[in-house]
Structure formats: structure tokens, C-alpha cells
Image 1: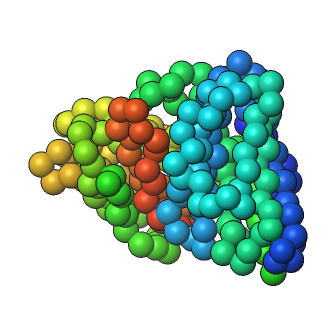
Image 2 (image 1 turned 180 degrees about the vertical axis):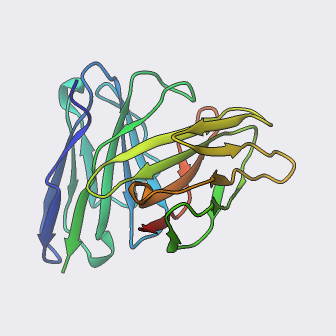
Image 3 (image 1 turned 60 degrees about the horizontal axis):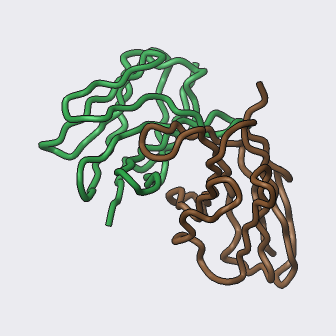
Amino acid sequence: EAGVTQFPSHSVIEKGQTVTLRCDPISGHDNLYWYRRVMGKEIKFLLHFVKESKQDESGMPNNRFLAERTGGTYSTLKVQPAELEDSGVYFCASSQYTGTAGELFFGEGSRLTVL
Amino acid sequence: GDSVTQMEGPVTLSEEAFLTINCTYTATGYPSLFWYVQYPGEGLQLLLKATKADDKGSNKGFEATYRKETTSFHLEKGSVQVSDSAVYFCALRTAARQLTFGSGTQLTVLP
């Protein structure tokens, strides 16, 4: 069974450009999460989808970030325009169940470097 | 709000040495506690977990005990191997909230 896959693995862009990260969750997992690790600091929650609906987007830093999950399958996270402080590793995770009983399965992460 | 503080790295040990990575937390309510590991080139993987006070999580020779009185969940292994080299993250989760992670500890085990 395929795990959570993320694309691209590494993206280097200039400040002001746009980048779109993609996440394919494990098949059948309704819950999809985005997290971010900036500059070797803690991994921080960005948002949570249940199917195609945003359940919790309290961690989204500002309106330059747009997450979508059309059809409740894969998700994209767009950063437009990118700023230097957006550099970091963006992790996607999926789970079958919501709440503390639902183990999260993480992807390898997409490393974003903004120059 | 919820927070996790873990031992800063990097940590470098010789093979077969004893490992401790400290983790303390602050949480509203009664969290479940986790250790995640990221091996080079791989995603985050759940290493072990504990859901209530005095529970001990264990996996692959690693152990951590949920200590409510000291709000701690220290990770230990009696004899590390080169293959244990990775970044280790302590995390907590309370009902209806998302995972809260610590800053990660890079472990390097030398042969």
C-alpha cells in the first residue's frame, strides 16, 4: 500500500514567486493535514481537511497561503507570493480516523527554499 | 496553549551507548504523548506513544514513560545502533486539537 506522497521534494524559488505543493494521502483516508517546520524549529500545524472541507485552518500563517482539496483526494498548498520566511519543510499527513485515536501517517516532506 | 520542550541537539553517541532525550510538556487537559522519528530521506514515523499517566510506550528498543507528576515523556534506549541516527520529535495531542511538536533532536550514532 502506498504511503503519503508529496511533490516536489525540493523547490527553490525567488521571493515574490508562486509555489504549489502537492500531497497524495493514503487511499481511503478522509483526514489530511499540513504541517511546517521552519529553520530547524518545531513542526507547526497549518490546517486539517476532512474530505474536501477545511476542519481547522487555525495554523495558516496569512492569506498568502491557500490550501485546497478538491474531491477529497489529493491536496495542494499554494504560497503566493512567497517570502523569505516561508522557507522550510512542509509535511503532509493523513489519517483514517479523526481525534486522538487516528494515527497520522506522514509524507517525506517538501523542502521549500525562498531566495 | 499546548507546548512541548525537548532536549536540544545535536546529540552524538558511540554505538552501544545509552540514550536519553528529554521531553517535557504543557497541556490543557490530558494529552496523549508521542515520539516521532525521521530517518534520513524518509517521512516522519510514529515511534511510540502513551495515552495515559504511567503508561510506557515501547518500540524498536526505545521506551518512554508518561509521567504526569513531572509532565515528562523522556525517550530512552539502552544500546543505540548506527541505524538509529535520525531526528526525534516529541509531540502531544489533546482531544479535538492537533498534534503539537517539539523542535526535534538530531541524533548521530558513530560506529
